[in-house]
Length: 255
Image (cartoon, rainbow, N blue to C red; front, top):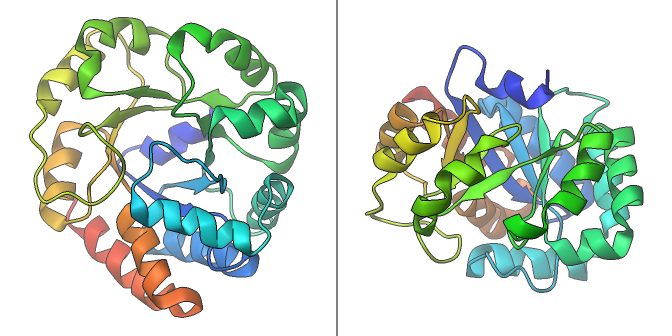
């Protein structure tokens, strides 16, 4: 059984995202452990990349700050290794195909297994081209997470059938970032997905308020909060720990 399943056992999952190396290596490790203490059941770690096409300004800027501090893919592996000295919380990388391709699929996923990573999200990986990545992921027990967007209604069953770990259901079209309203018929999409798979579903993109967490936790198996967390780190830097714990703790309480 995938370690990711633990995030969804007997409860609604609360998934938090942050960018590796923002504001620095040591604080990223500290923040991950703080986020777990506050109630996160899975952490997505963004590998800094110069062209993160699915990200809005908040996460784009975090990528640039981390790259300027010298964060690299190898240091992201070291970061996971450091977290694993203290915690077995499910950990997933969020990155783009270019860094993985240039690192080498075999080398990347072998290293992922060695350091204790559980899964990976690659937003710009086309479904029709995913087999060459998925085969290597499977070899090293790394779950390749499926993303399903609101435009995917005709493709939902195909995308869902072989999903592993969890399904990342994108709440809205566009890039990441907090949203005041989400108009997508997520209930209909979730019904379609559940007709073909038992893989847990987590809703992300734009979620940042208690009302949104309550609503989408009731529909899906969990929620993902990213930009709001990254914004706290951008504003408070190395002093973010208590603010992060308070923010996440308040959202987790009302699931």
